[in-house]
Length: 402
Image (cartoon, rainbow, N blue to C red; front, side, top):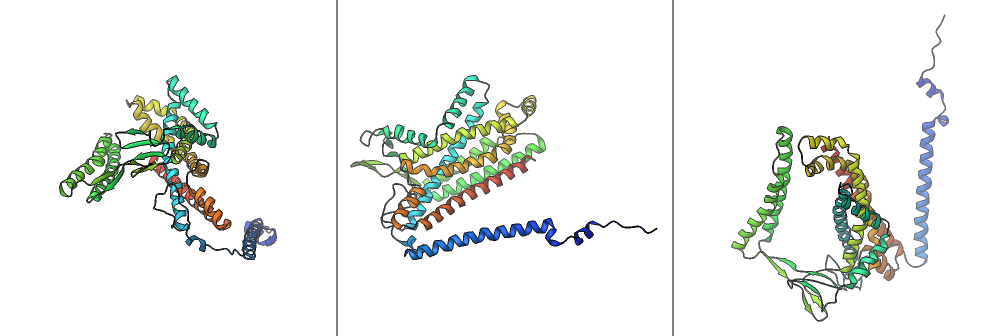
């Protein structure tokens, strides 16, 4: 009696027509969808180019070399009335990055502190932290920005009655004035010594971890690292002073006429934006930190205390490193929110990228499509950069914990 062999998987696939194969049909559907999307995008781009040419405004970025003809209140790089639109655009980008970086740093510090306070066994401290979170998280950001700008910073004294500290630091309605450092000959040696100290502290910290893992003994990394970071620049300062003289001078702000001249000025618009963004976002970061700490098993705390670790060491060496794996992913979203929320700077008059480029330049040139494209690419690039860095850091701490 002959055995009748059952058809194998390969035979069934061979017998099935290609138009009935689910895998092939899925690929065809995806290819058709991609062609439709690309075709729609190309049609819209072509339609935009044709309409712009019909209006006598062909799509072009040649206007970027034109003279802007307007000043901005604050700029990291020098700009004047004769600066090109490209330079004004770069100045606006740098202003946005200054506000964003300052807000991220301050929001992270405040958020971590409030998050830890929220879990404090002290009733008053935990309730104050909870009140902070509930108040600032539930008030719209724009309202908070207006409060800090119009309700606080605009009520400080005028220039004549400025609040001053040692006739070197002044606070008035125009801004916060600080002395400007002026590096002299040999100052680069101090910067080099600082860089060497930081690298040495990082290498020392890495060696200390390896030593502790091998022997169980702790090395005073904090004080030794501070000695390197502070001591080396001090020694370099003394050496440069003996050879070249004072390596750093200061330009102090002085009241001349109706305003202060010289020094560094922090505009009230920047201060209001940074304070508003930081306090608002810190309320969300505090809840992220609280959730991350509570995600760590309480047995970890009990084990650390049983080994004789102090509570501060337990939090810093045991709880926080494990909680970071839970904290970092949602923390990335908050950093991106800070960057995107910084576009509200226009409401307090801070010359950020949107205010300078998307606002003034667009109105002057009438190149709305070109300007909007650059704006989208700028924020897309910054957001992707933050995401890539935070993803790298998340993988790094995950590998370290393993």
